[in-house]
Length: 180
Image (cartoon, rainbow, N blue to C red; front, side):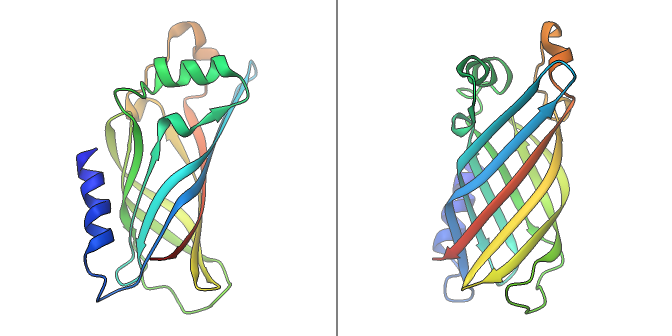
């Protein structure tokens, strides 16, 4: 966690003379798990992200306690039993847009590939995620959808509920990053 916080501080306070930085504290995350027995869905609007338009570097962090479910018991189990949010309080990504710089086409979504390390439950995994970005009204918007395998991040799923939770959780991200 200290590494990611350091990265945020470093990106926020350096290279400002050489590049334009964009950030948000209101990025949106959504995840969905569907089985024949139960659908599990959560929303999150507290993702912080920073993007450096000079080199395409990107990082985000989301407090695990920021995920909200329709049912309070589901949220409690998610935080206490699965993600262990007191022990592992953040989900994080640190990487860059591999095809940077983008063509200068304002308002049009461009397909990009984000490469970096996704850390959930204290376990970092190298990931390549197909995403989309666009420059609109002076801001960068990004969106992405990807799967997260619970076993990759050593998220314990008790045997009694294994049939209710898929092995891969669908995650979507959307954020508008404004100039710093």
